[in-house]
Image (cartoon, rainbow, N blue to C red; front, top):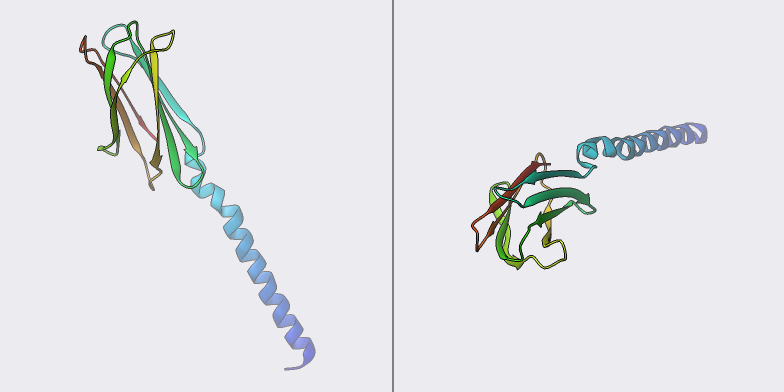
Length: 136
């Protein structure tokens, strides 16, 4: 192989490598485009309270899940978050802001395909239940 042939072969290999790299870089956003926006849903509870559930993507394949409950009392609430039917977090909290609300924020793994996120809180005094569910 002469010097000119070697130069052409290297040029073709470089062009193929550049095209493949561009294909990967430019094609990547299309693969994750369905999960690039936050989703939120607000709903009323059984009595006078309301609940909002928000799911938004973070870097590194993480979803940030935020649940807020607005109540007209400062009672204690038991709460839990589920991710694809598995309990991801749970706890007890007392509504204490001026608007008698509380906020729970948790990070969850962003699995391939749809992520079913469920939040449920129950007032330990009145028995009122607030729940919300999103598929992300």
